[in-house]
Image (cartoon, rainbow, N blue to C red; front, side, top):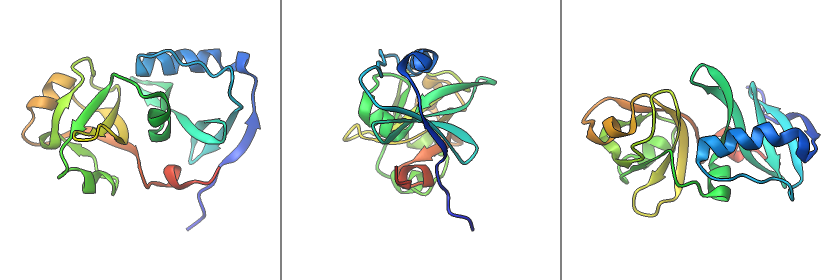
Length: 167
């Protein structure tokens, strides 16, 4: 197995990143300003990634049939978005930390504005700490009502290759 690593890493100017800032602002519902950071773009496992001050804070992925920039778990910790989240009980956490998709039964509260196919981040319902992110398979209202089945297709989590990469 080959060692996963960041490739094609290059510094970029803030003015080149305005579109990325806009997409991140949309996906998180808060104003993203990267003007004071050292910004780099790179490539990791087939996706473009955004590195701010040596932290991987965003990745470009397929959302609603087009590519869009979304925060990584470190990006969520950095920006602390208030929307597009689903909170899970402690029974779901060990499964998420192994990369499992998030089951509806483990979700107790979710942002009702989440749409199927949209970006969602998963947090611990007790601490509010971010655990993972993925693509919603159902809307936020349905997530809270589900008793069985998958609610979120997990893309990135604490402890995965992207999380563990050294920048």
